[in-house]
Every structure is written in structure tokens, then in C-alpha cells.
Length: 378
Ligand SMILES: Nc1ncnc2c1ncn2[C@@H]1O[C@H](COP(=O)(O)OP(=O)(O)OP(=O)(O)O)[C@@H](O)[C@H]1O
Ligand SMILES: CC(C)(CO)[C@@H](O)C(=O)[O-]
Ligand code: BAL
Image 1 (cartoon, rainbow, N blue to C red):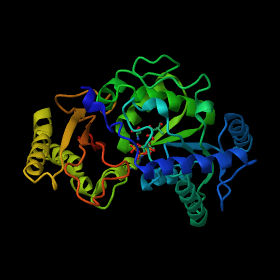
Image 2 (cartoon, helix red, strand yellow):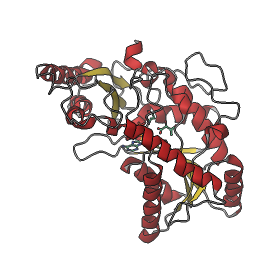
Image 3 (tube, rainbow, N blue to C red):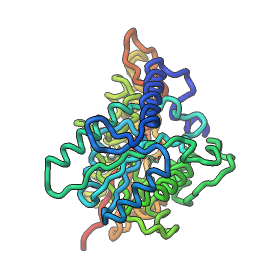
């Protein structure tokens, strides 16, 4: 069980990763020292501490400007940008948070090597903000980036990353315990806790999350409902690479060899969707062909030589209720269902001289994806 949750092992960091992390903290520290810092060539404010952000938020309220929040962990890509665009359609001021939240990473996960690309992120935000201004159409602007220190986010010190750690946590069960939560036992506790903090700090009218992390969207909706938070939760579609792979900050870990096989999960989910579209409603009818495809692809790879092949493990392929993420045996046509999956791309065997092993230098990479099976209209 434990080996299944090691999305990345504790290998020493590749030197490029160490450098990236150091460069990230140096450029962020510069922002912390400046008075009223903004992103270069833009009017986007950068907040690192809570009081200044609160003061700014109060002014938005007085100016009748509504606020949308897009929470991220940085290493921005087109998936994040599409959420920001979505937010700019209905909010005068968009806040993007960039914070790699330690409490959602398990002890053997990739907290230390998580890609940090502050300069590139801020450049992307400045460019997008200019595009939004040029497009007209009364779009809102990217008003601020909230890139808090861990001291600000965890004033009593961050609770440990272990399952048994004590501290002030938000837990949303049972949705946080299944699927991703079963494989990453501290993940959703960390996500719910940090999102509760972000929502309390920014006090957004609307928040934006990506469908790529579908269980996270169900959990956040549940949290907002159960804690009577009065925030509107919007979900943006999954943005994909040209071949259909869901964009993810962690894709940089794959390297060339594993990237070529990374579509296995998407392909398996599409086969399952095909069965549903052809009238299949039972678990076996829908998931059977998906599991079979994954098994065949794995078999095909295992018959290649070690210097060519890619090994992967399917963690789960799930057919679940769209409101609870609990597994279903038969799809209720009036509700539809969520097909989702996670695959662990194992470290490459027999790496070749000069082979691209990805940003972190080769450990296993966890990929997730999903498809929403729509309700059938009667
Ligand atoms: N391909 C995508 N399309 C749409 N939204 C996305 C996509 N990838 C991530 N998001 C959303 O962006 C928000 C921030 O996610 P995050 O910063 O963790 O990026 P990520 O690419 O999901 O990284 P990771 O590799 O850690 O999963 C989340 O709401 C997430 O669902
Ligand atoms: C929502 C989130 C920013 C919380 O750290 C993270 O889980 C993510 O990026 O999806
Ligand atoms: N996008 C989800 C964040 C995580 O996997 O840690």
C-alpha cells in the first residue's frame, strides 16, 4: 500500500531543480522587501503577507468591485490561464494565489522538487493581463498575486505532513478519503485546509478550479456548502496538450520516453466513455474495456526491451457518483457519472546516455484524468 503512494521517491534533487527552487525564493524575497510591489510591466500587485491583502480587499468592497480567486501552486500553464480568463469574465478583480502548500504533500512525495517558476509565472500573468485589457468586452483585470509565506499561512507553524500530525485541519469526509484520498492520505486534508485559509484571507465572491482535479472540485463544493461559506464555485474545463494529455505542472517530470506512453489513462477513459455512449450502464460494461485496454498496453510495453519500454501501474479507474465520488454499480441516467483514473508512470529502466528523464531526474510520476458522463436527456 505504502509504495503505491510514493508519487516521487526521496532521491536527491536534480541540480537543475535545486537551482530553480533557489531562484524562486530569491526573486520572491525581492518582492517581499519592496514597498507596494507589482509584477514588472504590469499593475498586478504582489502580496506576501495577509494584512496588506486584507486592506486591498476592503477597498475592492468599497469600490463595488467583485473579486474572483484562482488558487494555484504556480508553474503556470494554459490550464491555469484558462481559469484566470474565466474569472476575468465575471469579476472586476482577479486574484491568483501561488503557494506550494506543504500540508497536502505526503512525507514521501515531491514537495521539495515541485516545479517553481516564479519569473516565468509572473511574466505569463502580465502578458495575459495585457491581452485581457486589449480584448475589451468589459473583462476584469488580474489585480493581484497572493504568494504567501508559510509563516503567514500557518501562523502556529505548519502541521507535519504525517497522517498522525496534530494541528488545525479541515477534513471533508467521505469524499476526501476515496480515490486520490486513498492513495494520498493527507492530500485532501491539506487541500481543504489551505483553501479554507485562502478563502478566509481573500474573501472572494467566486473561486475557480479545474476539472482536471475533479475530486478536488467535489470536495471544495462540499466544504463551501457545509461551512455555509457563501462563495460561488466555478469549474473550468480541462485544457489538454495537442495529443489530448491533460496539462499538469507535473508533466515536466515525465521525460521523453514516458511522455510517449502517458496517454494510456486518457485512452482508457475514452474507451469507457465510448461504452457509455453506446448504451452501457453497468460498471462492467463501462470499466471492463478500459481496464482491458490498460492491461494490453502494459503487456505491449513489457515485451519491449528494458532500454525502450515504459512500465506503469494503474492505481484506479473509477466510475463514481458526480456529487459524492462514491463508486456506483450502475449509472443513474438522470445524474450521469464521473469516470476518473490515476496511473503511476514508473521510473525508466536502463536509461540511455543523455536520455531526458524529466525535471526531477526520473522518479515515478502520478498522472490523473477524468471524463464526465453526462446525464441522459429523456
Ligand atoms: N489542464 C488543466 N486544465 C484546467 N485546469 C487545470 C489544469 N491543470 C490544472 N488545473 C487547475 O489549476 C488549479 C491549480 O492547479 P495546480 O497548480 O496544482 O496545477 P496542476 O497542473 O494541477 O499541477 P499538478 O501537477 O500539481 O497537479 C487547480 O484548480 C487545477 O485543477
Ligand atoms: C487548490 C490548490 C491550489 C491548493 O493548494 C491545489 O490543490 C491545486 O493547485 O490544485
Ligand atoms: N493539482 C493538485 C495538486 C497536487 O497534486 O498536489
